[in-house]
Length: 492
Image 1 (tube, rainbow, N blue to C red):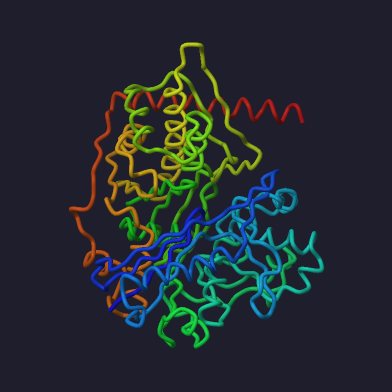
Image 2: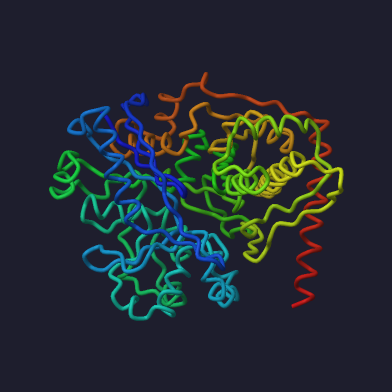
């Protein structure tokens, strides 16, 4: 059996063809093209994902017969919005998850935060897609009237493949519009957000079949007509499963464009404890506790571009720069290049640099930025431990290709850090979910332990002397943020 996983990230889209035993048969990757319009307006042309899907299938077809593919499994970034008409044609460019044009609406809705948190598992945030729909209704009224469905990216691709408007509950839990306990759209919240329920997708559990390849899509691509397309959950839910975050006690840290920290949660407490984000898991009936850092790889790219004049990051050079600074850097950075994520949402927060002198080296500034990102992740790990145990930390994402950054994580967290040698934890988790949905394995736990290769994991031991210094430095970073934030509030 061969299953094609389509993993749609923020900066690229990957297709990986797997056998049911986890062996990779073919791989293809294509770049996405974000459009930055200023004032934190970030869009993308939906044709990017359509064209990338066709291009990936074409490349996969050169490595393996497409006629032998037996299923397609989807995972993707979760909170971008594409309004489409009844024919599935986009009415606007996609409003990306990082876009904050909805911040005034979020400020307005934030008076309902406590009530909304108990129902949805999260405070109002510019990241979640519900308030982006509200923005379209209020600011693009003629467009809103023509909207047949509001789609995220995997829903859009699913429609093109199957002709059906279907989503799973992991994505719905990132809209701010779904009742976390019932797993259904909440009518009172929809009224509050001014979103008509008929403009939203039908909801299924992750791992369920969303539809089947249409004759039209089959003729365009060569993929067999009638094979199932499965929604397997959002990228962070799948990454958690790919890292083995299946039962309580383990945490996953994914450091890509942004940073996402997740922990498994078997049951919701009767009253949700505020601070974290509570989401549906890709394991039906289970949940994940989540926090995020909005700039990780994006901050590294900024360093490469602005500090080192690299058009594209040269990781060999950057690795050497980090290794030059084999100590805790003396300069201090608050890492909110794109605002502060959850907990403590602050979309207006910005990066702050301090304790820089004429003796400060460029490499030290670079390392201090990387330190600050991991210190912020450490903040979130500490917060999570109030709700669920965190015994083991598993890391993935593009930045874990660097041994220096992985060791830095262990030193900052003061814990052993396990990094999979296969960087495709998200795609692997998607595969595991699909195999369960197709009844190849009875549970995610069984699928993971059948396919997991223990020799494909690297372990990094913390330097506890450095960790003690990072603990002090993390407190200084948090204090600096609070002082700057208070100063900004006093001025306003």
